[in-house]
Length: 220
Length: 388
Image 1 (tube, rainbow over the protein chains, first blue to last red):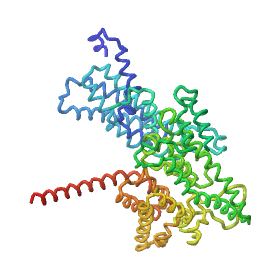
Image 2: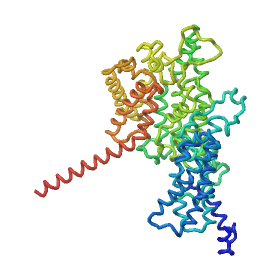
Image 3: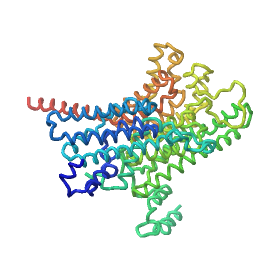
Image 4: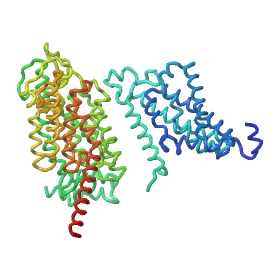
């Protein structure tokens, strides 16, 4: 990293441009709610907040590292086989993450099952490698990776929290809705646990976001 | 009446017009204004076919058609309750008991649904959608009387927002909002919508041997006693508020067909589809449910109610003539298929109609395409003949 800084002493580590790389994907350039990528895993793993959190962290790790590695290799990758190289890098990282999860949080890794492996196919990661890391320096690429993963993760956490709260009355496995509410006649919403409700929740989030930021609505 | 109109026009209306004190609520005012008397202009938006009557009048006809099942449902709630507790009471007590139970559900459904409608109409500045006048009545009729009121409110709000407003309001919805409300309840709170006891459950003890299972539940579980065909047809059975009496529903069907609002093609083909599939199952008859006479499917559960009031919804149904037959037939077939083959869902009507709602535009598309092809062919033939 120091090498990079020496080459470009003028640009600060957190220049406004770099900050935007980090903050844009969380807000107005969110990979899920604006670009509508990677929706599949959002539908599948957000039944509980814990699983959402673990997957979000996993994606942050994979995406940050993958962007750094591809950015470092960007001059050495022959353009014709770049997709395969990207895929290999992502796959190796995903296997690493999978092993770590199995070693330290075994139950969650069982719960996430195939979706950890499917991080490989998450189009956000591949998309950022193609669109950004391949043409940019290491530090901005890292920020871009972290930013996009955080944007993805934030939606994952939001949907996970809503679904677990309304579907099971708990957060992170702890009961949040007090017992007297249940005694009063409240019942957990079974529909929230089913995948269609994740789709509708994401849809409502998109709706609210576009309602607040009219610039996102493409008026043709 | 003249005096009322005069009063509204001169005293109340200016407040809601541009520059008036309550300008923001002029959509709300308009909704109530057109409810009181016929205005000069008629409905001009929405994907459905329009004619010289305002949509509000159309909806009022449907409400009139809904009166027989509603009245019967109210009485049946009381009848089932006192049958369960083994008490002998007068007719009027049964009706009163039913009223006390059913009226709050109707009020909650209307209030919560209209509140959402008014909020959207005000914030988006479009007309208040009259469609909810019917949906608000259909929702209470398709759910069991034991459903808690807050669930009714939640389901109604969900149906109006996700089922209708998201797509652009009345006339734009893909799915039938009332059925969506029921589907929401069915999947969100399954124990309240597919339980054993569908009559009012209070502090009173039920008499021995009484089971609140519906006919469909009896058939799906393979135990319990099946009500007689007479009871099934006239509706002296437990079930959702408005669905039990095929007889009352047929009365409503006459109103719908006579006024030209409900499509006879759809109604007839749904019944035909049900009979057809029932007959096919009769041929195999490997279990008791399959061996059940086909006609009984039509008087069991919500089949008739769905066929008459839900499948014929002019917005979510097929629009083309032939399309209506296909749409209706498939609803009947799928309903019986779900009922007999999938024991997890004793009532297939709701799922079948929602499913076919989604396919209705596709059916229409192919019907229209086929028609275009046919006419092009005919044109070619004519051209060849004239050239020869």
